[in-house]
Image 1 (cartoon, rainbow, N blue to C red):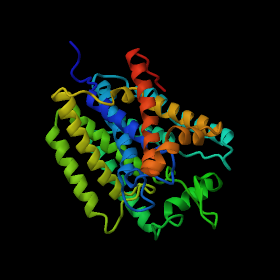
Image 2: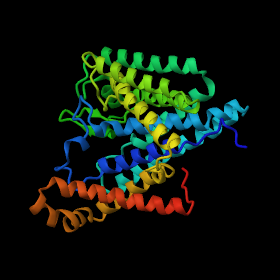
Image 3: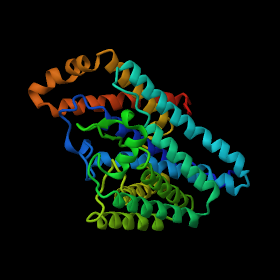
Length: 357
């Protein structure tokens, strides 16, 4: 009989998969000039549905650590040996992110190499949350989470402003890696939405997922739902002093986005694990990083070979725009891109092919 401590929840795989599908949808419109507002990130302050996608993924990283690593500790595994094992995957994810950006720099003739990115942030947060799971008790994990929120809040406030390029996070990133950041203003100041200082907030999101995963393991749904409501209320209440901001991953944004994640986890667990609904998105979820990295390579290929525009015009915009306007074909292209990768991961899942990085 399987040890009840070791549980792979279909709801978590499904929610992770739907999150990856949402990433692909948001990142790959046919025409960036014509995107429906909910699929665009907020220009600076604010939180659109697109701004919830990345925190969903990071929180689910924390949930996965709670489901996969913590039971091994409870079973008596050597912590030092387990830490070495836990460290391998996030370092590989980070390396893949660095390699993808190197390829983009070389193939797409970008003006400079960018060291920060989505996979790099996932790797760092995975490593930090994994270490917390191994070496900190639950109460200490909560204290670390609270300390990250309070400390990041104070650091942002001490910076004097939250304005683009002038905030403390951008100034630190600019001092460390100015020429290699994602974007620069007319004065040459740099900013990166996945920079190093704002990773403090992202780690807090991952730790929140770690604690939520423990509630899922022990079927504490009331606590999970209650925490979701509390996080949403706190995240909303904080906005007069600390606005939601994905670029800075502000503490209020951690709470607001985290509340939605906890609520989604509770609903998915009830519907999929307890009531037996289909685990929609599971195929994406069990090949999540591979699908994200593979789809990124596909984007590089389409852009590098100058096929993106001809494919979009020929298959979508050319005949749809005169009849339906420019926004729907742009969305149709993004949906087709997601469908293409959904078909591929379904095919891989049916053959038992899982690419683990």
